[in-house]
Length: 136
Image 1 (tube, rainbow, N blue to C red):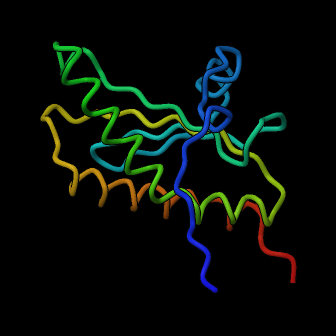
Image 2 (cartoon, rainbow, N blue to C red):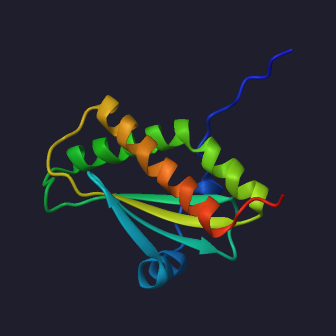
């Protein structure tokens, strides 16, 4: 019998701790994959394998409605595609904090964000595999 996978983004997976966010921006690594800038750091203490936060610049999007729309798109595409990254980190018993910042200046559509988020998550998986090779 086939079991359905549930795509959720629970409270413990959201990056909310001010202390963790400050530490992430101070000590974390980053890369850009237009239209995103990603800041990430392997974490010692977390409630989930990956904790993620999302932000959109108010410099490019003056209206809160537009900023919220972009964040909603980012969260949704992340929610649907994060399972591979989570399983890689769970296998290696590592924890990661990720902050994804939208740096584009045009309101994106869902397909564009979905495709770009896929590239971002693949790169994070690659980083995980390079830093912690699988036990063979």
